Image (tube, rainbow, N blue to C red; front, side):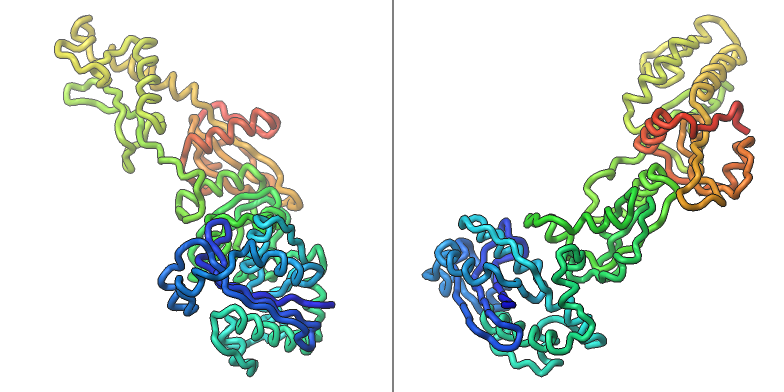
Length: 452
């Protein structure tokens, strides 16, 4: 069995937009080196100054170096039918595979990551970067951050790993179905192994514990691992994978609850890698209030924390359309509802009616609107747990919240039910999810005749 230990220097962090400035390949049988290859490469783009400082490779050094396409046949020959080894193997592999593909060569090789293997074979070390690891293992390394020297040092680290691997970690990594090779370099396989197969919401955290992504799943383990399959070399995906250091989760009673919780958590945490679901909050609400003359007035205004709205919505035009329908149906005054800015007497004054008569029509309109906004619960038994029932409550057309009910809870009074649930922010996206769900599963809907 031969191993191709690879190290590259690049102009950036993702293969689709950056080039390789140097490549080093060391072929070993696991005990001794049998062949080596090293060359500078012209990346066809400027090398950023900080990378020049880090590697010592300047633009003028690579200006006359061969293009990757020119050395691709030799690189492919060295890597073919070998086990691809690198320190943080997915980085090197993604670059080499990407540039080989553009040169007309298809690379598909088994991989070994010396970062992950070192953590297993040499636990409790102070660090596992190549520099720290070689110092702790007593491996000589010249010219750190140069491809040939780093590949040679990584090959020696591999020799130490193979000699000390009494737990069969190398063999396990080489199994075709072994998931760990696909994981981000900083994410422990132990964390993913503990993931349940139930519905829920998962959180990816960065090195400081901050949540950088929130997702939902019908099967938590399958969905989380699904993030790490494929070979997308784009900057967004590579940055995403590089930030992941930890995963946590919350199990939910149903996939619908997972959808709702995901939406609420994205809005609460605003993770940097969640590009969807960052909808604006309901910016407007319909309120009823009494003016100085005793008239009840309907008004659309921005959402107020300490006022109870009749209804909430995202778009001003949506609220204005709803209010115009009420005005027409119940003969209300457009000027008193702030939809008509013209001067003159109000409608009740024109009709010669009293305050109470006009107010009664306003209350009829409000009652009509509320009556047509349903109150119901979505209930279902979580898989594998027959002691409690999951419950999602819609109150007068608005999402109130969700939670779990003790066995035997009677769904008769909304007020009592609310005491058992956790309130969540209402949103039209969430309302849409719930309405679609009960259309598909009408038997899970429990309606309430009156709101207490």
